[in-house]
Image (cartoon, rainbow, N blue to C red; front, side, top):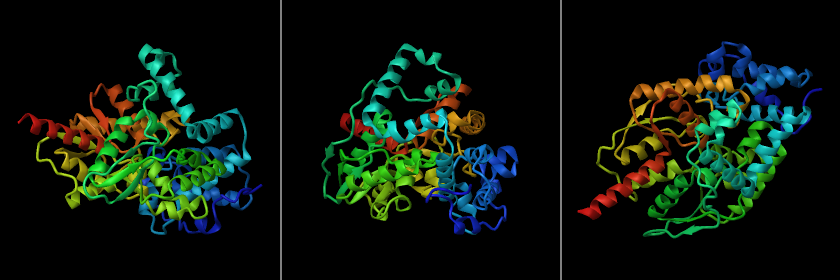
Length: 415
């Protein structure tokens, strides 16, 4: 049996790889294992074998499942192979041609529960109780490690969905904030900073009630039909706004590629912007201020879907500089931190090696602050920094900037 779904890797995608090997040094799994099957080139070869009639079996699932989908290979590829789309297509085939309790549970979580705000909030309430009572110590080791990296949860925190914030000064238009799944429940402070900065930059900010999960985790795990449904819901929810702002790198990268998932998806994709882009532009235009205070060092971690997919690297550093912080680079090669959605649960050993390496790089800088613009990366960094005993705070760049502006206002008021 070969491919059975319309989402499978296309012949032109597979044939575009010229087997040059330039992707190998950029691939985290190849760097760690040295295995050809753990490289983008090897994975494309495996896809080509299935396209030629080989079965979608356990070995094929193992090869595809080891990929972090960081897409660092796309940045260096001279043939512009759309590896991310091919990988999502291969995983859609695996989802369609394999079964088992583990796959049903994965679909339940990534494609069903995450698009239910009620389910996410009930899960958050349970997790917050476990944090407060230290019941997290009873969780299985691979789950306990991830829980250790969470921010302190607040029971049932207020949602941003349905709220409106009026623009300050001259109105530039209406910007919709994507609430997200875990962002809304676990990262409320990032949402607050995003809303206030957008309003200060002249945007009226809304967060439509009709929105749902962006679908990134479902797409990465192969649940293509569920991904299409979520994209269709969001297209309708964000139809009447000028700008769609996302403060999670993985969600923004996925939404900018909605044209791959649903007819007319480019109409929404063309209006999606990462919050780092919008805030950095406002700083450059003088609509948001630059602070001259010395706030110390901040280690900058580039989430893969911000750096490799959206190609956004300068903007977070612009924001941190405007906050009076001095950015310190931790990894010029931009290797993945090992979070990669649910990868840390599925491939804990590979994730641990990458996470530990990234934490050691942060520790070597001596910085007590770390900036990361993706929730999974933040959790991963905090997990492995805590294991090193390094007391560094990990936060979103816009969160650090908003806090710096608030401190500056308080100092000015005292004078």
